[in-house]
Image 1 (cartoon, rainbow, N blue to C red):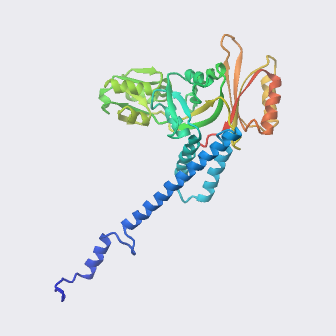
Image 2: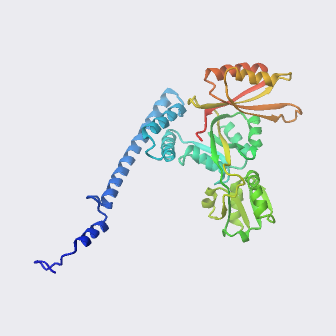
Image 3: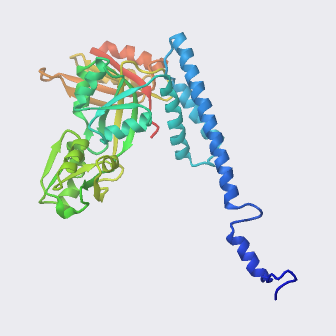
Length: 382
């Protein structure tokens, strides 16, 4: 019935449900909470601006003191402190990713960085560069891995990022050979999980007459291609980016490429994840003219040739083992035009500034006919 003012009385249950529909809960509506989020976002933006200005000030102070712009130890301490303070409340991997972008952007505000990678756009090398430096760096595609080394050696570009080994197919020989030929230093490393996508213009498998990709992805998808597309020929090209560009220009060509290539070249996914083995990872190295100072969690790489005498390799390994140095990789490469002679690539845990590494390397020189320190650099987090 109507009340004295002519308004109908609503049942108590209906009024309650109306309150729920309005989004209120104990006095807090969705709009109220969103307003709080907006205020928090505004605070975050203000703090990001303040952090950026502080980073620029540090850059100016380092410039006056002629100090290196990049301090790996300081960055590692920041990540460690944030992880401890977080206590797992914010997703750890996301927290690391967010602050990696913030720290990298602030560092690059001190000095713009250009990075060469095996192009064209959207190759796995391009992806590795973005993962390492974030989106604020300037990325320059080049045609071959050797060209990356050449650009860095001649200081036409500050850094290059190159693949050195894959967990399935092994070493990238063009990278190892370029270390022999060019004088550069390793500045960092990165492990990138590789997922291969079969892509073309239509997204239809029936349209594929040719499959193009770099030799490594073709090898990493060999069994899948043999089982599912045995009649389709494959063509090896300089990079997955080149293959994607070919697919964008010809509807009968499919590429095996990265997720970034799909967006960059406006292609469609035919089948995702066609690699033969899960857990496929490629190790990339960052090269430049100078290695960074120690971070406390580093690797050191050497390129050596041993004296032509019995026991030389055994002595070299013993010098390192006697100092509890963990040798994580040793690989030989033949010396061009010198049959029977080999160079050895060595990776070990630690920095040349660490006493055991420095002493071990000095002893190592005693059994080497040639010795080159390729660099000491922060280890990959993954």
